[in-house]
Length: 238
Image 1 (cartoon, rainbow, N blue to C red):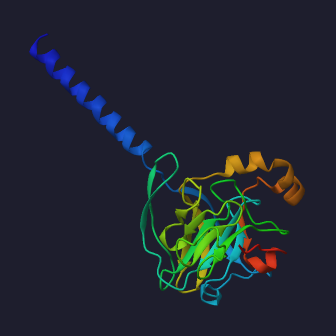
Image 2: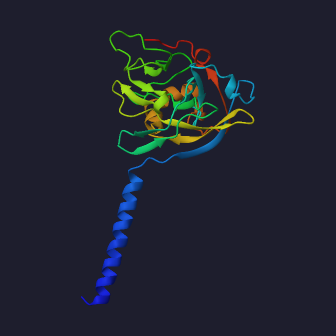
Image 3: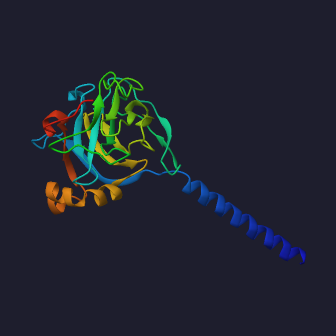
Protein backbone atom coordinates (compact mmCIF):
# COMPACT_ATOMS: atom_id res chain seq x y z
CA UNK A 1 0.00 0.00 0.00
CA UNK A 2 1.49 3.39 -1.04
CA UNK A 3 1.24 6.58 1.01
CA UNK A 4 -1.82 7.88 -0.83
CA UNK A 5 -3.77 4.64 -0.35
CA UNK A 6 -2.78 4.57 3.31
CA UNK A 7 -4.04 8.13 3.92
CA UNK A 8 -7.32 7.43 2.08
CA UNK A 9 -7.79 4.22 4.06
CA UNK A 10 -7.27 6.04 7.35
CA UNK A 11 -9.70 8.78 6.34
CA UNK A 12 -12.38 6.24 5.40
CA UNK A 13 -11.82 4.34 8.63
CA UNK A 14 -12.11 7.49 10.71
CA UNK A 15 -15.29 8.50 8.90
CA UNK A 16 -16.80 5.07 9.44
CA UNK A 17 -15.88 5.14 13.14
CA UNK A 18 -17.35 8.61 13.59
CA UNK A 19 -20.60 7.51 11.91
CA UNK A 20 -20.76 4.42 14.12
CA UNK A 21 -20.19 6.45 17.29
CA UNK A 22 -22.74 9.06 16.25
CA UNK A 23 -25.26 6.34 15.42
CA UNK A 24 -24.70 4.61 18.75
CA UNK A 25 -25.12 7.88 20.64
CA UNK A 26 -28.40 8.55 18.85
CA UNK A 27 -29.65 5.04 19.52
CA UNK A 28 -28.75 5.27 23.21
CA UNK A 29 -30.85 8.38 23.83
CA UNK A 30 -34.61 8.71 23.71
CA UNK A 31 -35.66 11.79 21.77
CA UNK A 32 -38.78 13.91 22.25
CA UNK A 33 -41.57 12.94 19.84
CA UNK A 34 -43.60 15.78 18.42
CA UNK A 35 -47.33 15.38 18.01
CA UNK A 36 -50.00 17.97 17.22
CA UNK A 37 -49.98 21.10 19.34
CA UNK A 38 -53.12 20.77 21.45
CA UNK A 39 -54.62 23.47 23.65
CA UNK A 40 -55.96 22.27 27.00
CA UNK A 41 -59.52 23.45 27.60
CA UNK A 42 -62.45 23.10 29.96
CA UNK A 43 -65.67 21.27 29.09
CA UNK A 44 -66.98 24.41 27.37
CA UNK A 45 -64.02 24.67 25.01
CA UNK A 46 -62.40 27.59 26.82
CA UNK A 47 -58.67 27.43 27.44
CA UNK A 48 -57.98 26.48 31.02
CA UNK A 49 -55.90 28.86 33.08
CA UNK A 50 -52.93 27.20 34.69
CA UNK A 51 -53.49 29.28 37.82
CA UNK A 52 -56.99 27.79 38.18
CA UNK A 53 -55.69 24.25 38.69
CA UNK A 54 -55.93 23.04 42.27
CA UNK A 55 -52.63 21.92 43.73
CA UNK A 56 -52.12 18.16 44.20
CA UNK A 57 -55.38 17.32 42.43
CA UNK A 58 -55.80 14.69 39.72
CA UNK A 59 -56.75 16.09 36.33
CA UNK A 60 -57.13 14.00 33.17
CA UNK A 61 -57.04 14.83 29.47
CA UNK A 62 -56.40 12.71 26.36
CA UNK A 63 -53.26 12.99 24.25
CA UNK A 64 -51.71 12.23 21.79
CA UNK A 65 -54.55 9.88 20.79
CA UNK A 66 -58.26 10.05 21.54
CA UNK A 67 -58.10 6.98 23.81
CA UNK A 68 -54.79 7.60 25.64
CA UNK A 69 -55.31 9.39 28.98
CA UNK A 70 -52.85 11.78 30.61
CA UNK A 71 -52.51 13.01 34.18
CA UNK A 72 -52.15 16.79 34.55
CA UNK A 73 -50.88 17.89 37.96
CA UNK A 74 -49.96 21.05 39.78
CA UNK A 75 -47.60 19.57 42.33
CA UNK A 76 -47.54 22.70 44.45
CA UNK A 77 -43.73 22.64 44.35
CA UNK A 78 -41.03 22.89 41.67
CA UNK A 79 -40.36 19.79 39.59
CA UNK A 80 -36.75 20.03 38.42
CA UNK A 81 -35.08 18.46 35.40
CA UNK A 82 -34.16 14.80 35.89
CA UNK A 83 -32.07 12.21 34.02
CA UNK A 84 -34.02 8.99 33.37
CA UNK A 85 -33.93 5.76 31.36
CA UNK A 86 -36.53 3.71 29.51
CA UNK A 87 -36.86 -0.04 30.06
CA UNK A 88 -34.54 -0.64 27.07
CA UNK A 89 -31.95 1.65 28.67
CA UNK A 90 -32.41 4.68 26.44
CA UNK A 91 -31.39 7.75 28.41
CA UNK A 92 -33.33 10.99 28.33
CA UNK A 93 -33.46 14.28 30.17
CA UNK A 94 -36.89 15.19 31.47
CA UNK A 95 -37.05 19.02 31.40
CA UNK A 96 -39.04 19.45 34.61
CA UNK A 97 -42.26 21.31 35.27
CA UNK A 98 -43.60 24.42 33.56
CA UNK A 99 -45.40 27.49 34.82
CA UNK A 100 -44.34 30.31 37.16
CA UNK A 101 -43.05 27.92 39.83
CA UNK A 102 -42.31 24.98 37.51
CA UNK A 103 -44.93 22.92 39.32
CA UNK A 104 -47.10 21.87 36.35
CA UNK A 105 -46.42 18.41 34.93
CA UNK A 106 -48.14 15.86 32.71
CA UNK A 107 -47.59 12.12 32.32
CA UNK A 108 -49.29 9.32 30.45
CA UNK A 109 -51.85 7.72 32.78
CA UNK A 110 -51.03 4.26 31.38
CA UNK A 111 -49.14 2.26 34.01
CA UNK A 112 -45.79 1.02 32.72
CA UNK A 113 -46.35 -2.50 34.07
CA UNK A 114 -49.75 -3.92 33.09
CA UNK A 115 -50.99 -0.88 31.14
CA UNK A 116 -53.71 -0.10 33.71
CA UNK A 117 -55.40 3.23 32.90
CA UNK A 118 -58.30 5.45 34.05
CA UNK A 119 -61.67 4.75 32.42
CA UNK A 120 -65.01 6.43 32.98
CA UNK A 121 -66.03 3.54 35.23
CA UNK A 122 -62.86 2.71 37.15
CA UNK A 123 -59.31 3.84 37.81
CA UNK A 124 -56.67 1.90 39.71
CA UNK A 125 -54.01 4.53 39.05
CA UNK A 126 -53.88 8.10 40.32
CA UNK A 127 -51.82 10.73 42.11
CA UNK A 128 -51.96 10.44 45.92
CA UNK A 129 -51.40 13.38 48.19
CA UNK A 130 -49.23 12.29 51.12
CA UNK A 131 -48.38 8.59 51.48
CA UNK A 132 -50.21 5.60 50.00
CA UNK A 133 -52.27 3.84 52.67
CA UNK A 134 -51.88 0.15 51.77
CA UNK A 135 -50.11 -1.50 54.76
CA UNK A 136 -48.88 -4.40 52.62
CA UNK A 137 -47.13 -2.04 50.22
CA UNK A 138 -45.47 0.77 52.17
CA UNK A 139 -45.24 4.06 50.35
CA UNK A 140 -41.80 4.91 49.01
CA UNK A 141 -42.46 8.59 49.59
CA UNK A 142 -45.14 11.25 49.63
CA UNK A 143 -47.15 12.74 46.76
CA UNK A 144 -46.66 9.87 44.31
CA UNK A 145 -48.62 8.38 41.42
CA UNK A 146 -49.69 4.96 42.68
CA UNK A 147 -51.12 2.01 40.72
CA UNK A 148 -53.27 -0.23 42.92
CA UNK A 149 -53.23 -3.04 40.36
CA UNK A 150 -49.56 -3.87 40.92
CA UNK A 151 -48.46 -1.23 43.44
CA UNK A 152 -46.01 0.51 41.17
CA UNK A 153 -45.14 3.96 42.52
CA UNK A 154 -43.93 6.88 40.44
CA UNK A 155 -42.56 10.24 41.56
CA UNK A 156 -44.08 13.02 39.38
CA UNK A 157 -41.66 15.60 40.81
CA UNK A 158 -38.79 13.60 39.28
CA UNK A 159 -40.13 12.76 35.86
CA UNK A 160 -42.39 9.93 37.14
CA UNK A 161 -39.33 7.89 38.11
CA UNK A 162 -40.20 4.43 39.47
CA UNK A 163 -39.76 4.30 43.25
CA UNK A 164 -41.40 0.95 43.94
CA UNK A 165 -43.25 -1.96 42.41
CA UNK A 166 -42.68 -3.98 39.23
CA UNK A 167 -42.81 -1.19 36.63
CA UNK A 168 -39.66 -1.20 34.51
CA UNK A 169 -39.62 2.43 33.44
CA UNK A 170 -41.03 5.88 34.29
CA UNK A 171 -44.41 6.92 32.99
CA UNK A 172 -44.10 8.49 29.56
CA UNK A 173 -43.96 12.27 29.95
CA UNK A 174 -46.23 14.59 28.01
CA UNK A 175 -44.46 17.83 27.15
CA UNK A 176 -46.27 21.05 28.02
CA UNK A 177 -45.83 24.69 27.06
CA UNK A 178 -47.12 27.44 29.34
CA UNK A 179 -48.00 30.84 27.88
CA UNK A 180 -47.20 33.27 30.71
CA UNK A 181 -49.33 36.08 29.21
CA UNK A 182 -52.47 34.05 28.54
CA UNK A 183 -51.76 31.55 31.36
CA UNK A 184 -52.70 28.70 29.01
CA UNK A 185 -51.25 25.21 28.57
CA UNK A 186 -50.49 23.42 25.31
CA UNK A 187 -49.43 19.79 24.89
CA UNK A 188 -46.73 19.43 22.23
CA UNK A 189 -45.34 15.87 22.35
CA UNK A 190 -44.03 13.04 24.49
CA UNK A 191 -40.71 12.04 26.02
CA UNK A 192 -39.61 8.68 27.40
CA UNK A 193 -40.89 5.15 26.91
CA UNK A 194 -44.10 5.16 24.90
CA UNK A 195 -46.40 2.15 25.37
CA UNK A 196 -49.16 3.16 23.00
CA UNK A 197 -48.72 0.22 20.58
CA UNK A 198 -48.91 -2.27 23.47
CA UNK A 199 -51.87 -0.38 24.92
CA UNK A 200 -53.90 -0.47 21.70
CA UNK A 201 -53.07 -4.13 21.14
CA UNK A 202 -54.08 -5.18 24.67
CA UNK A 203 -57.31 -3.17 24.85
CA UNK A 204 -58.38 -3.15 21.19
CA UNK A 205 -61.91 -4.46 21.83
CA UNK A 206 -62.44 -2.48 25.04
CA UNK A 207 -61.28 0.77 23.43
CA UNK A 208 -63.52 0.20 20.42
CA UNK A 209 -66.47 0.11 22.80
CA UNK A 210 -65.31 3.15 24.80
CA UNK A 211 -64.17 5.42 21.97
CA UNK A 212 -65.35 3.68 18.81
CA UNK A 213 -63.34 4.21 15.63
CA UNK A 214 -61.77 7.36 17.09
CA UNK A 215 -59.64 5.45 19.63
CA UNK A 216 -56.44 5.57 17.57
CA UNK A 217 -57.07 8.97 16.03
CA UNK A 218 -54.63 11.71 16.94
CA UNK A 219 -56.01 14.50 19.10
CA UNK A 220 -56.15 17.71 17.09
CA UNK A 221 -56.64 21.28 18.22
CA UNK A 222 -58.01 20.91 21.74
CA UNK A 223 -58.32 18.41 24.57
CA UNK A 224 -60.72 18.72 27.48
CA UNK A 225 -59.30 18.64 31.02
CA UNK A 226 -61.44 17.16 33.80
CA UNK A 227 -60.85 16.30 37.43
CA UNK A 228 -60.36 12.56 37.78
CA UNK A 229 -63.24 12.33 40.26
CA UNK A 230 -65.54 13.87 37.64
CA UNK A 231 -64.17 11.82 34.75
CA UNK A 232 -64.22 8.49 36.61
CA UNK A 233 -67.06 7.00 38.67
CA UNK A 234 -64.79 4.99 40.95
CA UNK A 235 -61.20 6.11 41.52
CA UNK A 236 -59.78 3.30 43.68
CA UNK A 237 -57.64 4.28 46.66
CA UNK A 238 -55.36 1.63 48.13
